[in-house]
Image (cartoon, rainbow, N blue to C red; front, side, top):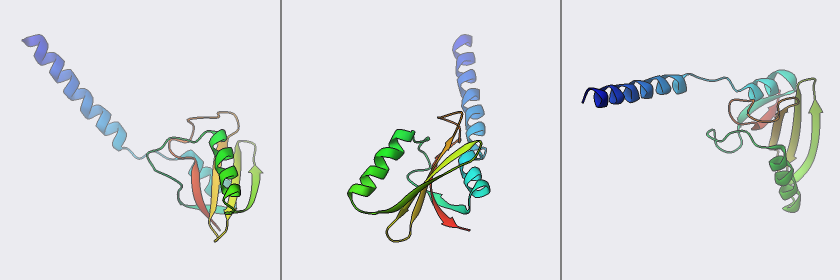
Length: 120
């Protein structure tokens, strides 16, 4: 009975620790990089804020689909020592940027790495 009580107490305490850690605001490093390193500022997340980072192959496929449906007006890249930014300007004025760290390819941003952006 004591073992059951101790096990339940440990699980209960672990739940509170995990909830406290997840409630802390994490800084999205990719969003910060876009705002600091480019002439654009982030206006929103492309997709869901619950999604993790998109792999570079996802960006390639999405850009090809934009071309296929004739909504892609222009695409270009900007690189720094640390970051690679792939911009896609769509018909209608929306611009999307895919952000990748040049050394660490995945799970670096602590959130999404695809954003809607506006010129500064």
